[in-house]
Amino acid sequence: MSHRCFFYNNLPPDVSKAPTPLAYLASPITVAQAQALVPTILSNRTTNCLVPRQTCILPGRPPQDNVCDMSISDSTNLSTPGMTPHGLAPTAIQPHDIAAENTATKNLETDQVANADLAPQILPLAALGTPPFMPVETILPPPHITPSAVVLSSPHAGRIYPAEFIASSIANITALRGLEDFGVDHLIRGVRAAGITCISNRITRAYIDVNRPVDALDHSMFSRAPNNQDSGSNGTLSRHVRAGYGLLPRLTAGREVIYRQLLPLDEIDQRIALVHTPYFQAIEAALAAAKDRFGRYLLMDCHSMPSHDQHEKPLADIVLGDLHQTTLDQAIAKALEAEITAAGFSIAWNHPYAGGYITKHYGRAATCRESVQIEINRRLYMTRKYTLDPAGAARVAALLNRLGLVLSDLMARA
Image (cartoon, rainbow, N blue to C red; front, side):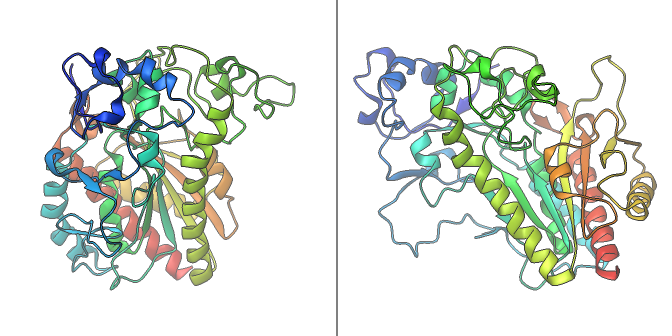
């Protein structure tokens, strides 16, 4: 399976003979070409830069229009048609008119999902740390919609792959993408109609997993052992780290080794600063705004899951996780379950996914701080690997929209 990924270099046919990637203009290259740049990337590690800083990617643009010059005025409109600085353009949907919402968004969601560009992008680290690019996307509700006490998080849907990471990986991008919650960032956007703010990580989980604490580190991956590695009470590494899925994943979803060599220790702080810290800052800002307005908040942490578990048993359509009734009020849990089953979806609680770090960190039942993890079965909205089923995706999006409306109403009345 071949992939075309957006990169900044217009490389000659034989990239191994290229004198330096800084000499070329932007155009798509293949993953194989990116990996051929390993020697050059390693020789330029002091700068961590493959291209001049004045270039950037504008997500959502066609490939031929996907490069801009940073010398443009700060007032230049960088948005794509139908977009606002916060995401999709406002619609005329009112926040708590469920019938109107279902009618008005059906065609909109189907069209957005059908035309979603879910291809991976390869960008140099220099571009990822340079405005206007933001590694974390905060999508606010339209101005005319009353804000909700509900905040939605999508930590694993990112499709942007740092070029240096691709070059250091022995796994191909098809294998790396197995760690993505494929397309979830497109499924969630309609919840804005309920006043919900969405926080979405744009950087691949294979690079850094923001649903892990910063000390969830596997010391075997580094040239020397980290000082702050995660350990249990008996001094052993945590379950996720031992399995190969810590803060910096060691393995792909198919359990292939990711890295071709040990990582320098400074990679940890660099990746945390680039992605992990901004993601949690965005979540906390949204939660603080909800709590200031309503005196409470509810965080929905959205993920996708395979159709079968590790024992090849089929999983439910939706798996909800509240860490075994410790992060969510049970009255809200029952309302969620009722809406999901009424919409014709099967549901399970806490198995095999009870909730990750984000759910645990921000939720506590019977308090003003609650959370729930939502796992969506990929068979509902994918026809094959990395391909959306527009009708199925629209159905899932409609369910999420409905859940957003119901939860927003419950939180507003509490």
